[in-house]
Image 1 (cartoon, protein in one colour):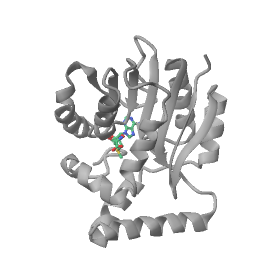
Image 2: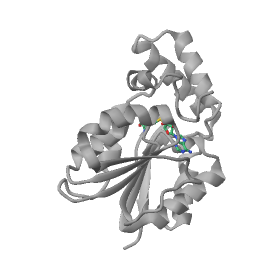
Image 3: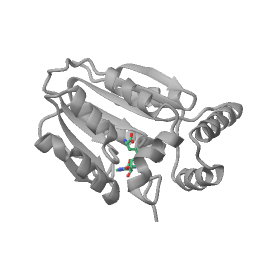
Length: 229
Ligand SMILES: C[S@@+](CC[C@H](N)C(=O)[O-])C[C@H]1O[C@@H](n2cnc3c(N)ncnc32)[C@H](O)[C@@H]1O
């Protein structure tokens, strides 16, 4: 039985697989990495929620060479892949197994930055709101939260358009339609995406300022906000 967000039964196929089913996956990560105000050489203390196999983590540790990242994920097999990949960064990466929002890791020092990619859309509205509150509490003054995720459209025809766009993308990557549908529908069972507008309001409600959407491609968006100074 797969856990929410594992996507594939075998975590070792996640990296090539996710690029085939999430259009512009690297661009979404780039938008997350380009958004924080920190300089390259700042010693940024980062929490990453739902790091999976550590793809975004690797890019983050490379982009900010003096950063440290605490990675949280509830999937043992995804963390296993991440552990291998992140070994090269030594003690700059710490891996913790847990399910947010319940196991939200209390910061010894407050986080300067909290990021997430393609993980939070598995939570229902109440748990997303609880998570946004926990993120806000854990950030240092002026710290940022940036999430790149699946969003839902209120207009049904836009959901259809997004679905068709994804199917075209998958076909262009050479995947068989049946394989794609099997994997995607199995993941769908856990999905509970919210609209971008709602999530921006919930961030405001949690106390964030400068709340904004930074990037969007159909039903994928990068958005976030800052804790007040
Ligand atoms: C689709 S993967 C995304 C991985 C990575 N962030 C990326 O961009 O490729 C989602 C990850 O979030 C994790 N996840 C989903 N919901 C979670 C929760 N409530 N608590 C902890 N981890 C969660 C899953 O185990 C999975 O590793």
